[in-house]
Amino acid sequence: MANLPEGVFLKYPENLGSHISIDLESAVTMLLRAITLSQQVPFSWGYIDKPQEGQVFLIFLPTLQAPFPSDGIRFLEQEARHALPANNRELEIHEAKFGFIPGSQNAGAWRLRRRFRLSKGGHPQLVLVHYSRGPVMQIPPALMTQPVRHYPLRPVNEPSIYVAGDRMGQKVFPHGAMPNAPPNVPNTHAMGGMNNIAGGAPNMPMGFNRQAQMLAQQSGAMEALERRGQRDPGVRDRSGSTAAVTRPPVVDDESGDEAESISTKTLAINRYKRNHELMNEVLRQAALGDRNASPSKPPYAIFNKAELDANIAKLESEIEVLRTRRRPGKEDQHLTLVADVSMQDLVRV
Image (cartoon, rainbow, N blue to C red; front, side, top):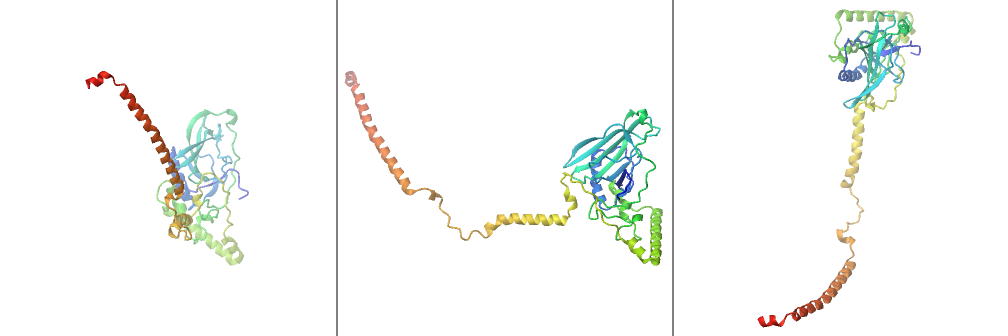
């Protein structure tokens, strides 16, 4: 995969239909369903070239900071980025306006491209790309016929690859066969993947003619391999060996959603160990206690009885002194009151 042509994507292999517009809630729902879908269906290498209005693509971008590869459309404005909260997640939107296909018959640049991804609370490398109609701008004559990429596009013969889950990085045999699966069993995940991301039931069967054609093609390929293996025993070993598992680079994103790659069993074991350690710290003293601990002291042991008695005696002596000083004052006051009584008052009495 080192010699891949420029502008090649890892994209979901099924057609996602045509949508006039995709609101924020629908984008979040589709991206959440795409997380499960990407673990079941391998993504294939291919181009996005001159997409029609309303087309939707689900792609995998190993490097998020790199510019978006060419899709055959020239945009007159730079792509703008917006980040919006979506419950406990963050939805990142990249919007490019005023696009046109060079050499087409369109008089104005009206194509609009929006890229959605869950930067927090989802898989940040899964990107939903939607092409629609936006505001119109006049196309400069100098850019009217200037191509945005080189044609014809080089063919891509790389096998499909899983981009998430336990099989991340595994390549898939041609003709839709799953690794380590019987040769005549079709890839049922690829059949119903489109319905799964659009909200329908997974594993929906294909038409009878298409399924029969796939089975016949696989049977013919296996018979050809068997005939070649009879002539040269080494051919079968080489053709039947699985490709080396290569994992695409994973960008360290601060979204905090590493739990997507951790199994439920591992999470349960770690939580049990953590809770057991916490409860052990709480209940260990209550269950065993400190056997060598000294008896507890009474609450009034912090006071000194001799010191308290001395303070009480001192206070009592001071009170007695105050009482003795106050008694003569009362007697003098009584004598003064008696002396102030006049003779007339005594006669009246």
